[in-house]
Amino acid sequence: METLLQAIVDNAAEVAIIDITGVPTVDTLVAQHLLKTVSAARLMGADCIISGIRPQIAQTIVHLGISLDVATKATMADAFSLALKRVGLGIGFRKSQPQPGAGAADG
Image 1 (cartoon, rainbow, N blue to C red):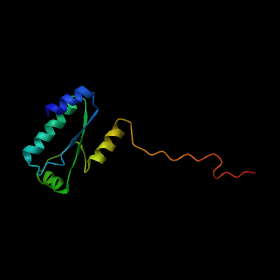
Image 2: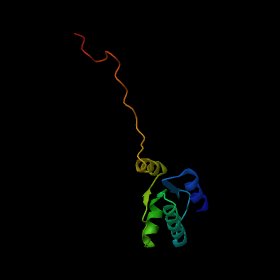
Image 3: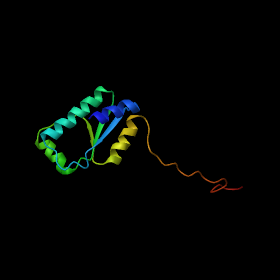
Image 4: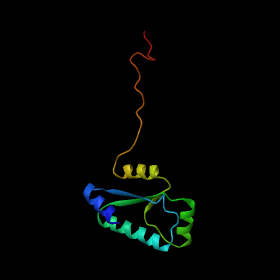
């Protein structure tokens, strides 16, 4: 938690992604710590997104009756895309520009 909060300050972060992909199980203590971390990040001015939610983790959190009042995504890529949208950015591909005279009728 301390590392995340310091990184929020150091980078003036508006969004923080907390990835729990490597967390094998979530019990009540882990979920509570996660919620406290999200709350602390919010107090520092950063919105949070939790990524790495696997079906088993989702079922456990619901079974424990824990309400995560935070955006969650299954993958880091989805969380990163959402984070970019929240700060008004995005990832896109430019359509190739037509070559001069290509497809135009000469006449």
